[in-house]
Amino acid sequence: MASSVLKVSNLTKRIKKTQIIHDVSFDIKEGEILGFLGPNGSGKTTTLRMVVGLIRPTSGDIQICGHALKEEYINAMSNVGCIIEGPDLYGYMSGYKNLELLGSMSKDVTKKDIDEAVSLVGMENRIHDKVDVYSMGMKQRIGLAQALIHKPRLLILDEPTNGLDPQGIHEFREIVKKLAEEKGISVLISSHLISEVQLMCDRVSIINKGRIIKNASIEDMLSTGEVIWTLDDPGKGQRILEETFEITSTIDQRGLSANLDISRLPDINKAFFDAGLRISLVDNKKQTLEDLFLSLTHEEKI
Amino acid sequence: MIALIRNEIQKILLKKKMLLILFLLLIFVTLFSYGQNYAYERTIEQFEAETSETAFDWRVPAGQRLDDLERRRSNESIPDEVRASFDREIQQLNYFIDNDINPITPTAFKFNAEFAEQGIVLFIPLLVVILAADLVSGEFSKKTIKILLTRAVPRWKILLSKYLALLMMTTILVFIVAVLSTLVSFLFFRELGASEPVVTGFSVFEGQLVSDSTVLVSRLQYSVFIYSLVWFVSIIIASITLLISVTVDSSSSAIGILMASLIGGQFLQFFLAEWELVQYFFVTNLDLTRYLTGSYQPVEGMSLTFSILTLAVWGGLSLIFSFIIFNRKDVLV
View (cartoon, rainbow over the protein chains, first blue to last red):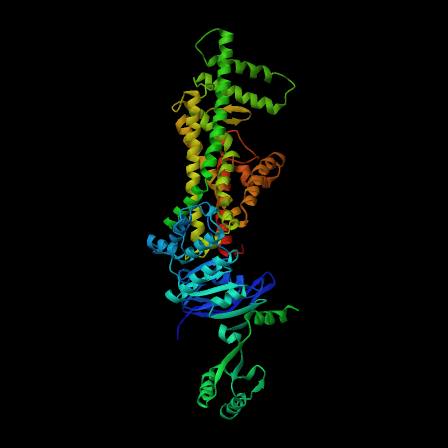
């Protein structure tokens, strides 16, 4: 079992008398990308800021690579790289100077590390220009490089693609995916852009009004459990389902459809095949993340 | 820690604050020394016109000034306080003449001391404020505080590095004020006057100027002493500015609050001098150099030691509160 890179348990935050975050718990395994999805004002940013030590939690515990943030701040934070709401850099310095300055704040960041980070985000050509003259996309790249120079095991990205054009979003996504796959970096990414989360993440936590209301892998979350077969003889298929698998099914113009546990699908298909049925299409019906998100967050709004 | 301090110094330098301050200083120092030189040349012209001699003797205008003061003090309609101040000046002038100390010819060292004496209450504190006001609040208003505080460095270390960098820059600033005012005025006066004697420690006892406790030091020693006081005041102002900078989230509010306290504090001293609490306000205590004349008391009962202690307490408390607030602050920008 892969160990948890980030483990958040029973986190709460109260500002004055309003409770903003209620008992939030989640964890991230090595190399995993967790999407944090929620409408504006749901507590995404507050939660992420507590994880990186910008806001102190009212109660609860945060562990990064086994180090408690409260007690072993330095050890915990040396494993974290982050962009919190947009790349905010020192505008009066060059991009390189920014990286040098921030690099010197961590142990053992060499010139080579900085150069690697720069080439990873593809900023070699303009790195010595002042940040003030960079475009949003370029700042975002430096922002990402800044989060990576000290080789963190956990990357925390809060609304990282705000203000980027589609091209920029795509490139950003590719870089983050590559990091998770090749270097085993775990990523916690918050967004209110559903499509982005769907394309990028392994798992999703949906948060609303300071509570996590759903926490599952993208696959599980989207699957409705309904499968539709298009067969040459749907009646025979229905009998096989009934007799061998004890599953009730219906036949309509779409084909043979049934609700079942997706893990049984390969066995069923094999049984159909062995019985000489010709399968032209098996469709695992999915709802879109958008539908799910809206249905989950809508109920609570009223 | 050294890397952190170096970073902070780089930030201050790259913001080009020092250049702005240098520019302001250069303008003011040049203006003042030009003005003083102009006034002095007029005195010489007047002397030559009146006596038709070419060798300027400072005793003549000093004597004239003395006569003038005597005449004005015998005017019955002037208030007693003014007469007392005339008395003091007359006694001082007499002392200068008796001891052959030239109070009239301007020199570079006389100028740098005067510049510091005038600047210590407002001008130099303002320069420090320019340098320090956005130290922390600037990181908040530009939102860069987020990349600064998410490194594996505890918050107190970040604030300490900022404070130490500020102390260094403030020290350099005071040094620049001293050097610049000496150099620029030397260009005008052509007279360094570093070894001229200075009399300090006149004290007033029952309306009489007592010169028993006076000390004769060289101009150089005197300036070093004056600038040590300026340095002390600057450090205290820097610490108070740090507290304001940590407390508010925008640099402009920080500058505004400090300007208001510096300028408003001066008014307080005039209008509420009777009120006892005024003497514990830091602005009332800034004018350290004026205690050196021996007769200065902004509020009854204040002394150099009292002011230095009061300022030290202000500085110390500001620092403690800065660290507490910075450590607990939630970053919401």
